[in-house]
Image 1 (cartoon, protein in one colour):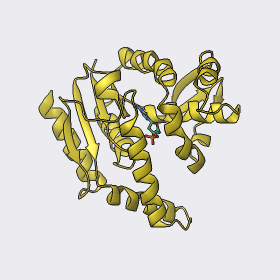
Image 2 (spheres, protein in one colour):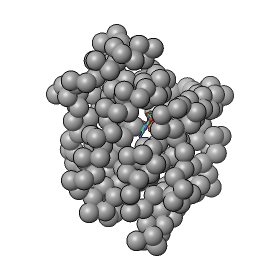
Image 3 (cartoon, rainbow, N blue to C red):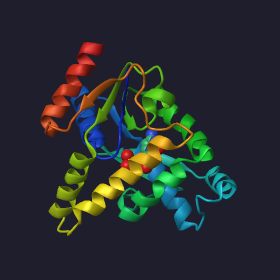
Length: 220
Ligand code: DC
């Protein structure tokens, strides 16, 4: 059983790179951000704000959260409902940090994530995988890129979907989310001492995947 932890800020290319590494190595790709998003989506849908942690705690405790892989793509289910598309909206992106900062949310998801990694070889991406969820992971990579490069990637992605984004707004959102994720008290975004830093600012996806696979092969 091999566990690979990939952490880093939003837009560093984690999910694309982690998915490709997993496919190449025959491991399961686990996108933990999607799990946090599903919690935020479900709470918001139920009208439960992050400002009331006791209510959030009571609401999410009995929630049935499940991951399933269809054609290699991760789907997230909340109480049997596939929420995979609904968690990708700008609204969910904007509010997820507030829920992800709550200790009750992180506690609720810790065992869930560890169980997945115990059952099979995984490439798990998130913010605290190498530091908290899988501190004994076989390989840890901290993937980053400059805020400007990450904002530009997001800008291009939205343009390719036919939207008309404003670059400055995206950059501001990237900076706000970085700040929220790295300054929270519980399990902040930070590089594990034994993680290897990979800056993808000047790399395209193929070059970044190759660099990550090289790191993994060297480390093992
Ligand atoms: O990677 P993403 O943008 O889908 O993550 C959504 C949010 O969840 C992001 O604000 C950070 C948070 N998150 C977290 O706190 N811990 C993780 N392991 C994964 C994501």
